Image 1 (tube, rainbow, N blue to C red):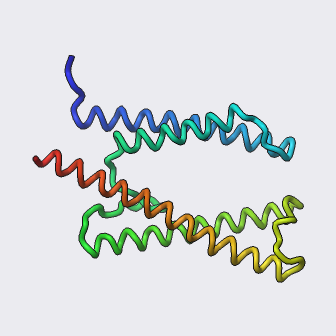
Image 2 (spheres, helix red, strand yellow):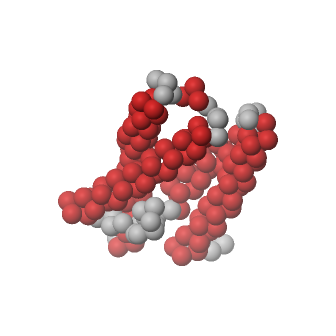
Length: 168
């Protein structure tokens, strides 16, 4: 039996990741629909599917995903070890985390305005809203930066390892 060449392996990995992403989005949709209807999330099979496909997605990404990391805006980031390339990646991670933290802060306030989870406020009144916004934005930004940094640097190392293997 013939072994798959690099292009076939990459295409198979991409296909599998697309299927897993669709399954993950389906499970997320089921959970969102349940929350909209009942204000609770109790669908254990959908939660297990979401977590399981997320784990498989990461595993497949690790095995087949030797693609350069991309910013949220779709720009391909450099993968090299030079200080300039690392600085460019860190800048992209910062922009991505600020955008994501901003979006999550807006969604949180959308939920509060709809009357959901008003017990999130650390202090009642406008000062509480301001404090929550700052905590959500800064805390979320730090968490998102750490996650995007770890995933982006892992992807960069994996691309560099694959290139080194191909050149050897």
